[in-house]
Image (cartoon, rainbow, N blue to C red; front, side, top):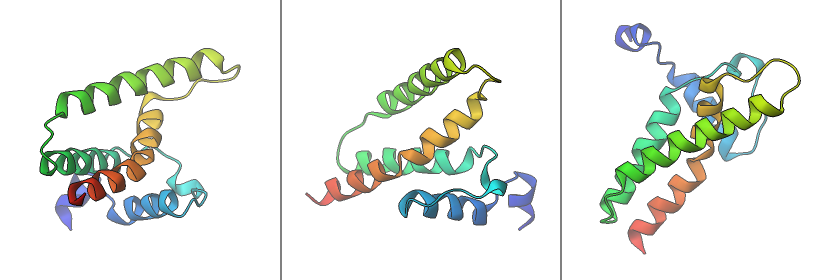
Length: 111
């Protein structure tokens, strides 16, 4: 679709990254670049699950995500002896890492 191409959203790559997180597979080299649409969808899904559960904690979710990403980015760049790690890459990896938390938030709706 032209709108997805214009916004540089690639659903197939997002799907492959999500499947690599779910099934603990290694990521191909073409998926190594950072992607922010997948983590944004994952964080929005977690916020929606918490909202359906009756807990409105959007500020905590986004604040903790930003502080955690910036803190980990700082630690990785301080400890690396070679070139540093890009902040967008850290945010992408941590965002996709929230997928199991999304599953638990979804299960918590029904418990």
